[in-house]
Amino acid sequence: MISFLQPWVLLGLPLAALPLLFHLVQRRDPPSVVFPAVRYLRQVSEEHQRRLRIRHLLLLLVRTALILLLVLAAANPTARGGAPSSHTPAALVVVLDNSPSSGAIAGGSTVLAGLKTAARRVLERATGADAVWLMTAGGLARRGTPAELRTALDSVTPESQRLDLGEAVRQASVILEGERRPGGIVVLSDFQASALSAVRSPVPVTAARPAGSPPENAGIGMIEVGPQPWAAGGGTLVARLSGEHAVSVPVTVAIGGRFTRNTLATGGTATVAAGDLLPGWWVVAMTKAPDELRADDERFAVLRVVPAARARCTDLSRHVAVACQVLTESGRIRAGDDVALERLGRGASIVVPPGDPSGIGALNRALERRGSGWRFGAFTVAASSTDSSALVGRERVGRRYRLVASRAGLEAGVIATAGGEPWIVRSGELVLLGSRLEPDWTDLPLSPAFPGFVDALVNRVARGEGVTLEAAAGDAVPLPGQATALVRDGHRLQVEGGAVFRPPVPGVYFVMEHDDTIGSVVAGIDPRESALGRADKDQIEGLWPGARVIDLGEAADAAFTAVGRASLQTPVLWLALMLAAIELVLAAGGRRAS
Image (cartoon, rainbow, N blue to C red; front, side, top):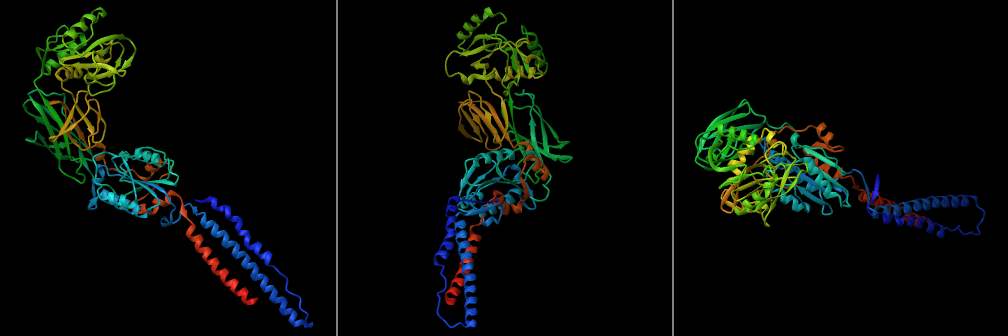
């Protein structure tokens, strides 16, 4: 279907009637001449007049068509398809997938090298009249001239963040919503099956993928360190491989950069026993034999080694007493009075509300004398659930006391929430829970994770230590409320407590409260990046309805063709030039005949 970029110019189409008007005005009958009645001369005259009429008619048609073509050319006609070099001004988002999997080596070069070459050729087809964006795995789309974006390609390297291709197409569609020019999206990716998600785009999408099969690959997808903190006796580290792993893969484990162990990962799992370690924070680095994708050959973990907390398992509610006994038998709790459970003691205390509501006032006064910044507020029976956090998952809370800060600025002490309100808080050595640890208050005591929850309260929260948070590079991680800085490889980054942090690269980021280490954030490559298996054409077309799936080498030709409009102005002008030449020949012949 033909359309026009300047349709208002079509108002000049009535000008095509001018040749007809001039023809009628200039029309005249041959003069009558007194001449001898010679039949031969009369016949010659009639034939001459007939040839003139034919020439005038041709001139009329040619001039009318010439004016029509000039008006149409001025209106800049376009049609769907056509040669990419003659496309009309368009808006194009080029999605370049430089996620970790693009660093895989295939055919002697990285996958990203082929993707960048295709992106460069697409940008070479763009003109200054086009609006062009370049989007990479970081999720930010950069707009610039074709030359600027080609220069930007030189600095594109494999990033640590995973790219959800469906989400990238959705963001690109939002970018093009306000564009008047016809828009399109070109996705240049290895099209990992794990990175493909469903999306329906209102603009044409071209999916360009490399030919051939991806290389086999295995990576370290996870390191399990067990309950934290470790006691002085050591523990066991478990590495789990991701991707397509062989029967056995050599794995090297380094603890604190000094203690090295070598083992074989069989069946996708490697187990390493770590002996006695001195109290403190220990960084664990696990590496495997290199393969075609190096980004997932190393992963980190953090160990916290401290002596087990001392607490007494007497005079406790039934479920807490059972959990305490289990933890004592496993060496996670030692007998002593360092931490008071379910009561307010002289030192570190984990305090729950009393079973008798009349005792809440006396408890609040005792908390105030201890300098607590929190107290128990109004009682509520509104059903809610805990908000999932590193300490506790989603659990029903049927009865609770609201925890109220006695002064402003104590939000940093919130450890867990229920219904969006503080449910576990910490102030100095005191930890307050809004509910009793009994089934009629909350379902948490019935959960299989309850002993681990009590372990974390006694060994970490009561000591003022946070948890080790694990995330993929680029994912959002909520920091503890009391965090003031992050430290990685000796570099310190000031942060705001409770803010969201996105680790830019894999590694260990220690969470600091001034000069004290209160936790850590361990970032790694998303394990799904290790699975290099690619989605086939049917999978892409099924999840992206209407998308055009092509080989990477066809991207440059298909990019602007898919946008949908090719300019017809040049061929129309050439046709008008041909008609102008014909008009000159006819007009010159007519003057000689006259």
